[in-house]
Length: 253
Image (cartoon, rainbow, N blue to C red):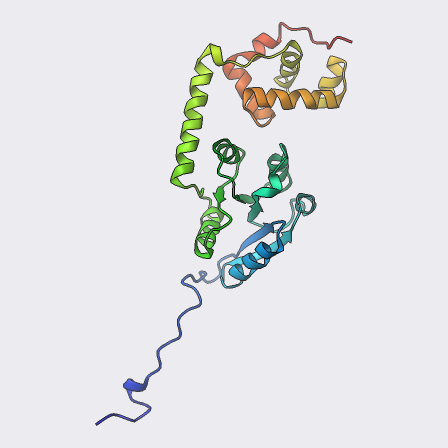
């Protein structure tokens, strides 16, 4: 004989499954994400993914780097989800983004798996590199970890970074691998180690500020550094400042 009483435990309805397996802690702050992607389909797709997560919030959406720079440092955001294709053909894009949005942690979505490209992204401050075809679950997990201050890096990328630093260490200790710097480059380095700005260096060396910028870019590439601080530290470590003092402190006309 069956129990037809609707109040019986046999007729209790099972609770509906939760929309996701993560619940934001009461009073916790939402993770605010900037989406920078040239393809609308990706922006729409990521917006739908984030809408289902109680702790993720879109702070802004842009499709070009110029729009990203226009946001300024005061935008309330924690993480930047950046399409790797937007960096193609540029050399200073990442440092400029870091300068424009210093409080934001950067994740690059890239279809490129080039070794040098991967190492360079991490070296320039990117917190994570993920494929364009990443699953929604992994994307959300990546954002949460990086927002918490961690780095998202797979085993292959770890090996690439380790090998890159090993190669760099060998180059630093082998005189044969030391880059050759011209007298003009050494003259600029001498000024940099004194803490002078490009305008001051140009005046001191009798040239223009743009010329100094062009030389600095070449110096960064030769020495494998990305900014003035790294350059100054490199010079101190390799005693380049001593070599630089012996070159003429004036560009020839």
